Length: 332
Image 1 (cartoon, rainbow, N blue to C red):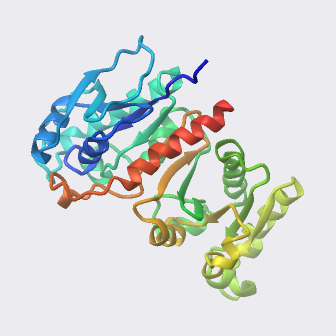
Image 2: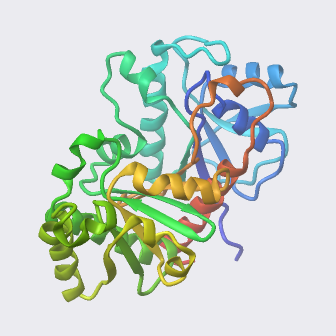
């Protein structure tokens, strides 16, 4: 019997940004999976008219089996906007709309309606301006799925970078780097590389926090007092860990040849390198969730919304990654 068609949820993200554009551009080609856009169909129709793209939609029928997506067509699970913003002009009134699209996606993934979730870019600032504390997709999806330990991983051709801390001020990073946190993050990362990427024995390189990984304690003691002991504990449990390695060394080609993933201590220690290597082809993946979640590697790009000058490369890569991870999890 043929394998059943996968159904992948797709949240377009901030309605005034490029997320709707990317969904519509991607819909111009046929897909073997059923892509289900969770959002306001009127927004998609209006943006298609602005972009002069052919577009039609059909409403999701949860009782029907998934089927491939035809060119120029999207399946839609409707969620109504609170306000219809102009391109590039976000409205905080839509904060609740954005969160409802995520909630509906998580519910669908947990129930088995969707095999995975691909999220488009949204603006943290816009949601916070509406009076709703929001630090990012990763943290919100963890809470929505009742997941205690999750890890943000970005993957590009030739490089995977995970983060020990995510969207926090740099001034707080040192206090957040504890042995307990590092051991939790590395366990999630190791398990994710096995379960979601099919790597039987992952090799993980762990960055130091300080320049030159502390220079033997002369430039900071986190490597000696915290990072090193955490790695030693996990090595004793069988993990293949290298580090703490200076961040200006770990990303050299020679070092990357012998590692499956790099754990950076903070957001801007690892992600600038990854984006330099693979921007437009990189994918944001949340490890540790009970659902498959991938995302684009870029923001809302308000200045490009409605112009047609957007590149769907990262969204296409995110969909491909979601399909691949769903396959690994199902044993296919």
